[in-house]
Length: 228
Image (cartoon, rainbow, N blue to C red; front, side, top):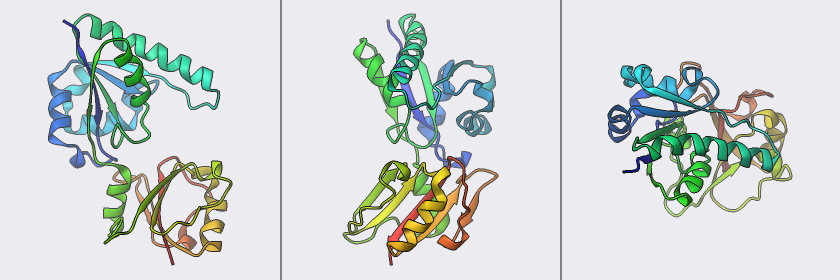
C-alpha cells in the first residue's frame, strides 16, 4: 500500500497560529520533509518544533531547492527531491512536507506535488494561515472591505518597477532587495502603505508608514498598500 504525501502549512511564524489539523498530521507521521539544506535551521522546522517536541525524533528529509533563475536547474532539483519522497511513499510510508504559511501560496510544495501526483501517488494539501493575513492582523488593518478587490503581487522588481493601479488593496511580497525603489514607486503612485517583517517571529518588526521602511529588507518583508 502506497503512502500519502501531505503538504502542511505551519503558518507565518507564531507557533500558536498552527492549525490543530497541521499539528495532528505531523504528530501522526514519522517522515517529515523540510525545505532547506539543514532541516533544524529552517523557519518551518522551528515553528513546528515549538509545538511538537517529538519532531526532533522523526526522520527528517532535507529538501534543498536553491533559489536560482535557471528553470532547468530548478526543474532538476524538484525532480531529485520528488524521487527521495517517492522512495518512502513506495514503501508505504506517509511523508509530511512542512512549509511556511499556506502550501497553496508561493510554496515549493506545489512543484513537488505535481510531479508526485503524476507518478501515481496520493497527495493532500493541509491549509495554514497565510503570512499576509497574519500581517494584516498585526497591523490592525482589514485586508479588504465591502467590495474592494485584493491584489497579491510577488517580486515587484520583475514587474517593470510599476504597480498597475487597479482599484483595491495590494499585498507586495518577495521584494526585499528592491525596497528602496518600491518606496519611491509607492510615493509616486500615491499609496499609503504599512509593512511587517518576519511576521510572528522573535525578530518581527512593524512599519506604520512608507517613510519608516528600510532601504534593504529580508525575504520575509511584506507590504500592505492602499490607494491614498
